[in-house]
Image (cartoon, rainbow, N blue to C red; front, side, top):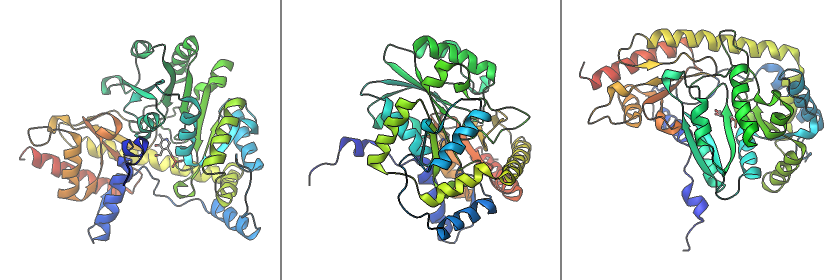
Length: 397
Ligand code: PLP
């Protein structure tokens, strides 16, 4: 048999998807598993959204539609992006995709040529470097550290830029660290981006999940140049507990949006028509905003709880996250001859205590593990106790 394509051979299954499947397998074998693994809200999709989807079926909205999405949804996204995020745009800038993930993939596909460098800040969402490689680009990883609250140093960014740099990827609030940039910080990054005429992929999927009175800001609103050069990626999975509906979108300049549309038209066509009507309801029904705020508040309470529980464990450290629903916990003081990295630690926690966590290697930072706190208070408390037990047993305590 002839060999498969190099592209197929080099791409790995997303480690987060892999761990999630492993947890499902263990559950199916009858074990009681507590999962702090997947980046998925534990809430049900708000009822009004589900009702709108049912109505769409009853109304026969089941046929092909525009590749870039139904006009009403694109207009609603443009209105929200203009009025709430302060980034002026119209429906022509919007392409609705199969989740934020396809929006990220489309953007890379439209911009990256063989050998182009794309700067990614670590810890990063697993998908960025994989897809950059997939499209022939070179991911240039710029590290941020726990001591700096996982915020980038402008000097380090400047040093990473070469004549081949085409784009930077910004994700605020961040998965996996929960760090979120202030407007002032974004303005400093924007100066560098403008000076070098770079594209920015601004992944804003956790926009609504933000704590301690912090405000979300899109780098695209800073100047006309930034608006032109930024591809905003957003979606409904995290904010509206709609992971399974696969609704995401990009907002970019009109030329780029047309290219993205062409790419998508050949690959997957438009996203599911029913999901699009559901997303339209999510944006236009004010009652849904209350559900979104209730979920946000609950994540904030859980963030406080998990910080309290983790502070009872010796020899770990973390930065209190200001957004998203993850704790990124440094466990490197537990490394020894047998446990050399976070992978071995997460495996051990799963084997010993049936708690699913994510290894930091997947996010480019092997000293830490990621815990999702999108789960019940009971699960958070029990999981932290179990993690403590597993970690202490590594040190023979
Ligand atoms: N961006 C980030 C930072 C994420 O964490 C995720 C999902 O985990 C996505 C994008 C994609 O979300 P979806 O494709 O489910 O809309």
